[in-house]
Amino acid sequence: MGGKVSTNVDSFRDPLTTPQTDRPCTFDPLYGFPKFKMGGKVSTNVDSFRDPLTTPQTDRPCTFDPLYGFPKGRKVKEMKMTWEEMEKYQLPLGLRDYCAHLAVPFMDCQRKHRPFATHYCAGLRHDWAHCQYKEEIDRRKEYEREKRLLQRKARKEKLAREQAQA
Image 1 (cartoon, rainbow, N blue to C red):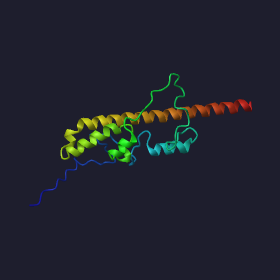
Image 2 (image 1 turned 30 degrees about the horizontal axis):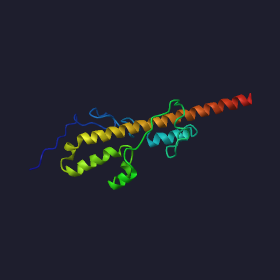
Image 3 (image 1 turned 60 degrees about the horizontal axis):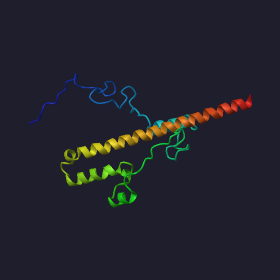
Image 4 (image 1 turned 120 degrees about the vertical axis):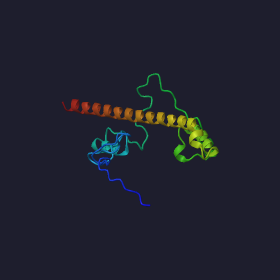
């Protein structure tokens, strides 16, 4: 009744020395710690430690005018659902963002087609995930814009100090 255990040494892969090729490597095989992606909390903390004057504070509003550098103005970003509608649908706080108008039908579809929601709601999930992706890109662009403007401000202040001393 007992099965034979395979002891083939050739099929064994050491995770610390052999990277997996079937999915993207998020674990550094040489050093044994996870690789961090751009904009992660750790990299933000490292940047704010190294150069606190030119690192945007992600927990505070922007320090520069949102229209600075846009002579014709910017497209206004508006919520497509009001806060009252989000409360009416009992949307969780984590989903109350610019993509809430897509999250509500997706969650409703999941409720209606519970055992087969993955199949029935794939299109709605794709639309919501695409909206979330675009929002993440916009947040990163705003972060990088703020960082560039802070670096520019620091360069101007340094140049003004050097000219004042000379």
